[in-house]
Length: 237
Image 1 (cartoon, rainbow, N blue to C red):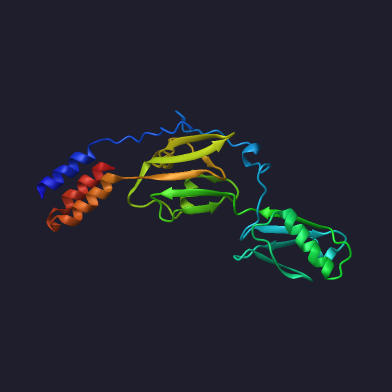
Image 2 (cartoon, rainbow, N blue to C red; image 1 turned 60 degrees about the vertical axis):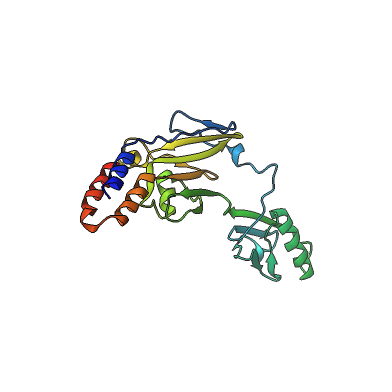
């Protein structure tokens, strides 16, 4: 069993430095500061926005106060409810298509020449993706100003196997893909600021292979040797 401990100590002493790159379309920056996305990076001029579940819409019917400035949220099935016409299926439709659908149904409900305006107030599609060694990987809506730390907190924080020195943020600006490496320990200790995160960013938290190895060794050795392995584990951080 001492050989297993010796192997663990040897592996923990090998400094592992994460290397980014290899993809010819990816530009790896020497600094931790990624460029800030511009308006064009969020532009949907070439692709219409399709309304989906949980988006929030503002609907106005010109000249009819009771049917104007109404905020509705799309339900999980992609439907909304609107006065006089009941349930409307809006899933996968553009705001313009929803305008036409509501106007058609209102006309059928004896509203003369209805002029409908539909705007998307909240877009659930504006999300940040958080993956790797976090407790709840997934996509989270960008609400207000978000930073790297708050984004990871949305994913319920890091795990016991997270490598806090290897957190990568991917971002696309003006069609160019970027990646930057961050150290959460350094951010937490105030060595540099908590970088801002934008919609469509992808955050990947690295994995600490040495910590997994130590846990495997701890589960395999007799209980009286556990304090020694714990001490080595702490040195590996």
